Image (cartoon, rainbow, N blue to C red; front, side, top):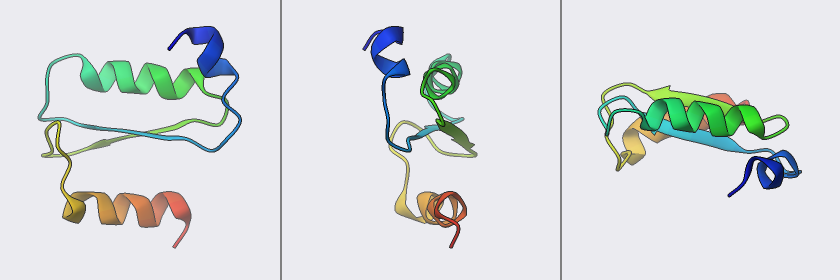
Length: 66
């Protein structure tokens, strides 16, 4: 997806990454979130490319304000 296309995203977007995945993916995810108006990025400690439900639950509660 192009930078221009990302800048037109008009819905709240959460971009997540794990710190135990391929080098550079967290920085890429952070950059994508920065290109989306209102985008939010979170890096989840101890998680790889397949984030576990247990690790995601507290992040979603935080992001959704619950």
